[in-house]
Amino acid sequence: MCTSISFGEREDKKSVEEKAVFAPKFDENGLIPCVAMDSVTKEPLMLAYMNEESLKMTLKLGEVVYYSRSRQEIWHKGATSGHTQKVVEIRTDCDQDAVIVYVDQQGAGACHTGRNSCFYRKVDLEAGSAPTALAFTEDLTFDPDSVYKK
Image (cartoon, rainbow, N blue to C red):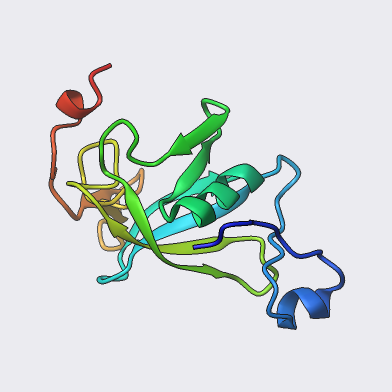
């Protein structure tokens, strides 16, 4: 991983889209959305946000570090649970305002609800009920109450 972390300048649209320089675009709150995906299965694990500091920490540590919007603080994924996310690859989209991090998920799961993925339900397109129904796609992989003793 990188030892000295800096991002490129966001010059013009063409340079952002075509140069081989990482120049992430943070929103008006200083955040960029980040989707964590399992590097082997390619399944989505979670969606969170990063600020400049947490993105640089991620590059330096080789483990994913997010910014918690609700707590307004840096959040090293797995610091409490031990369920860290080791970085395998980071991708950015064409205008560099979103990132996908392919990870090797450590421990029993990524979701604080006790599941492997935060995307553990799907919209039931066949149900035809109001409100629109959700169907569960996975079971608990750990007991969140024993992991997050709050």
